Image (cartoon, rainbow, N blue to C red; front, side, top):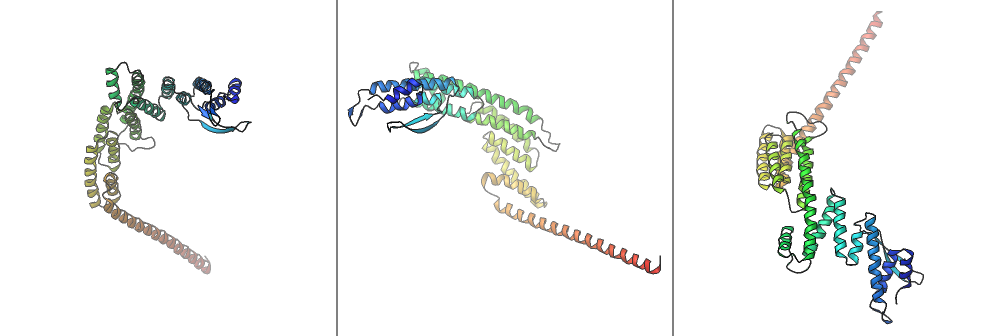
Length: 350
């Protein structure tokens, strides 16, 4: 029978409880046989779900998973009541896909710099574009192509429209990140020692943001990003210092340039060998670690040089302690000499 709890809760404005009660009452049949009120309960469930979705949307809660709490009613009935859910979750529950899509886009639109929010929205719409049959497209370009060929597929048309708008957000963020990277990089002067704020790290940070947005949306702007990363990496390699080589590798990684990384690691190994021959073990280790981070090689060389560095450090410490001891000994001898001289002067009456 139609739950009195559901009707009373809806009248009192407790839509979340009414939603759960209507859901329970909407079963087609129960222990007592067919449920003649199931249709009315189903309508109430959908009506309260729409109300909850609209309320969440009005509050700007477009997407949130919420929590489920067990509520025991006076008659002993236990209901799972959903609290804090977003508009997308309510509309999805009741099968209102048009409204669910709309608020999902609003969710991403309200957080245009939030890559996590953007990723949630993108995942939803890509999945939405794949539903409807085994021959649905897998990628956004394929969706665009199929949407053009089948203008009557309203779901696909809607999905592609939202994806195009999401792509505009991604492209804007990529362009802004690359725009911020340019002046950051040009503040770098290889002839000056960097103290405090590091322009290269700023450059890499902005380029990393651009790369993340590219990865989220099928790599739009990937070619300009790769070209700039290659240019930056090549410039860093002109300064044959371990730190510059590390920076070059980071640029090449961001540009997805495996051939440049391979060339860099080979050159870094050569510079490591040259530094080791000159006894510059610390620099040699830094060069070797570049290749080691990529291929796992150079471990024996690194261990050997680190052992030499440890011995050098121990010898320096021993020499320092000896020097301090000698200084202390000299101070003691000087004090004893001075005391002896004073005693002699007293004895002679001076």
